[in-house]
Length: 146
Figure (tube, rainbow, N blue to C red):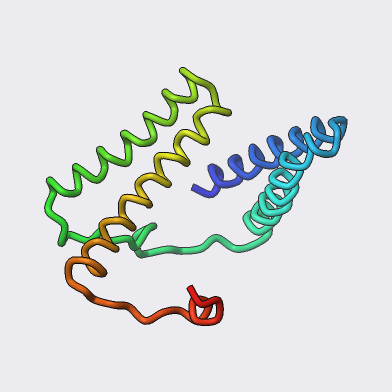
């Protein structure tokens, strides 16, 4: 187990060092993102490797992850939510492939904005117009007279 962690840290250090080395010859704007990711990765992976090599091995008797998913959601709703999220991801990837990244991003932002607008219209129509439930105005609304 410890050997695998050491090898993974060495791998990450090599990847980060290679990315830093390659990005040093690039213009500043092009090198900014790779350097801002690779330098912290190099520092953190080196720190982890040093801790693995120098520190004593931890003895863990509990499960590696103490994560319990909620079981109060019926499986069919769970499945529908997963399929919906997966469909958005697949749709985004297919859209990038078919029409390119520069057109896909604004298209998906418009879809999300449209979903937000539809949600707001439903909320407004339900509570403000149908139920006549008036909400308190915010401080900015009062100051600006909106």
